[in-house]
Every structure is written in structure tokens, then in C-alpha cells.
Image (cartoon, rainbow, N blue to C red; front, side, top):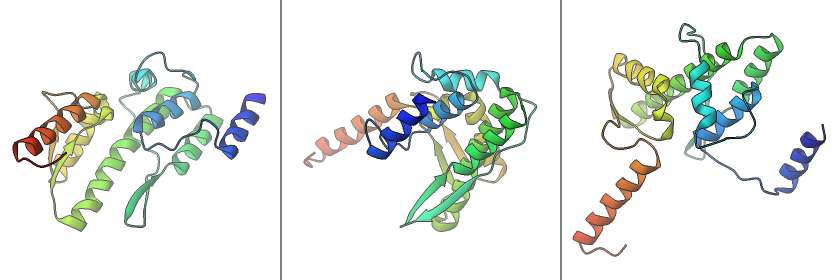
Length: 183
């Protein structure tokens, strides 16, 4: 109870509290919420455990709530958290909750792709970022996008996470240097 009160105080006063758009922090939060641990022992440990316990036979998903705000699309996580809390109150196993969460992330990727396709007409999708180290998400997202008629590409040679981002930055920097543009 004291820890919860302290967390609320920290959030209210914005002490050691930062906004993030990281999918990894979402996985950390869900893992903690369903009792898999409150501390990461190494990078992506919570996400790895969450994927490991997922029941591959569960196809249900939590809701996906995407809203446009000032020309930016935002994924509202509150309904997901509320649905997870409801499932916990119904004594659903962590494996079921993990599966529904993973399916929700895949559905988000597909719904966001549909939205951007309608706006731009683009039908090729690059699936990159640390979340695509997760084989459940990468394989299901790729499969669903291909079924919807998109061309989907996954990182297969270079790292999907920060290492791949760094490589991309180096390629762009190299191009700027070659073209004599100032970095």
C-alpha cells in the first residue's frame, strides 16, 4: 500500500517519471500486472517470460483502441489494462492473459497498417523494432498482413532492435557524407 501511494506521489509530482512510447515498457507493465515480476533482470526479460508462457491455442484478443490526435495516431492502452484486470479478477491463468495480450499487439499492428494504407495507399510494411524479436508477434503479424494482401518484411539479417536502428543511422550518415551534406 505504501509503495502504491509513493508511486502516485511520484507521478503527480513527475519525480523519476518519464513518458515513453516503447513497446518494451508495455510488456514490462503487463508482465508485472499479471505477477511475473516487477524487476527486469536483463533487457527484455519480462517480454521473454511473457512470450514463453503464452498459450499458442488461444486466439482471443484484448481490444485495440487507436485514436487520431493532432495528426498523430495514438494507441490507448487503458482498455487493455482494464480487460487484463478483469481477467485477473476472473482468475484467468497468466498464460491466457499473455496470449490475449500478444494477439492484441498483432491486431494493433494490422489495424494501424490498415489505417496508414487507407491514407497513403502504401501496401509494403517493414516490421522492425525490438518487439519483433518476439517470434509470436513477428510470425503472426507477418502472416496476417500477408493474408490481407500486404507485402510484409521482417529483419532477417540485421537485428530488429537498436542494433538495426544504429545500422540504419550509419547508412544515412554515410549517404550524407558522400553527398557532402552537413550532418
